[in-house]
Image 1 (tube, rainbow over the protein chains, first blue to last red):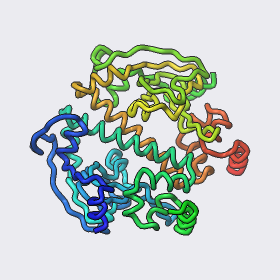
Image 2 (image 1 turned 90 degrees about the horizontal axis):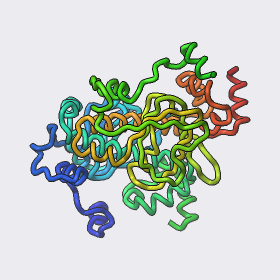
Image 3 (image 1 turned 135 degrees about the horizontal axis):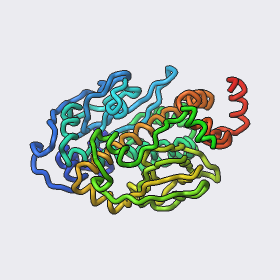
Image 4 (image 1 turned 45 degrees about the vertical axis):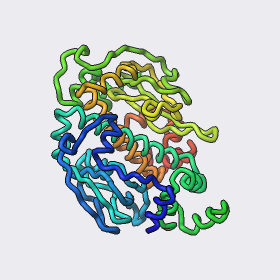
Length: 204
Length: 204
């Protein structure tokens, strides 16, 4: 409901793209139907709280997130750190596991009801052998993931939790308004009480 | 000289690949000459201590590192953090700057004399429009960079400096033997004195 309200208030982009529109946008081309996409796409709906890819699973799918929110987390020393939140209109999976065929050290979980387009690894690998379009798409999506990860790493190295929270407020109001304080603290790598103090000190 | 000695002692891979051999290896193909590579390649030699890409420059090249060592560093609050060291047989540049056309927040500097193959952005972008091979190569190189960056980020989040140093000793003896203690401390994000203590405590 909050999601719908925010959308009506134009705090979130109102366009939910499908995978065809997203590929046309990213590659600046004009495919007319999913039949022109060089791999098979199946649809999947996931309920809130359900795991998409679990720790130690080997990732064999690529997902396009049509609607909803997905959390990516990392487990270590019995502690969980949230690495990122993904919103509609992006590709996601446990990408390192997908690429290396090693057990995933991250977990993908649906925070809301989630609509996904699903592509099989085997189909993608086949398309990569001969399809210019598949390789352009794979390259562009990986470039975006690289930029995203590199920014995250640099922020970790150079910014305090307070600075990172302020930037989150500014750049990703979607996260701050839709995700619980506990989860934001896990994302910032601090205790919820520390986040409360930061929020008070900056009047948020 | 140390470099040559280590090579003779087989502590380092003895094969220096050129870009053609590297592409053939990565894509599992059999190109016979550089003329079959879908972009123009020029050679460049850089002396030790020379900057390849500086802070705030906009990256317009891709480099293949044929021999030598390149350091990638990040500047913040008048402090410098070393992000990575690159050794022979890999592609490198300030990739986020190259992809986004924004000023680079990293610096690439030659720690030794360095031999590079150089490719121009314009040539790559042209090849990306029509060449299956160029897109396969771009995708595979970006996938490797992604895996590398993601591992680095997870190590930062989950491991102490001592753990990271031990793993460096085990997995990257090339770094530990060829790079100064001061630089390794900057890479681990600790003071050189702390690194000395760690080294003593583990008998290194």
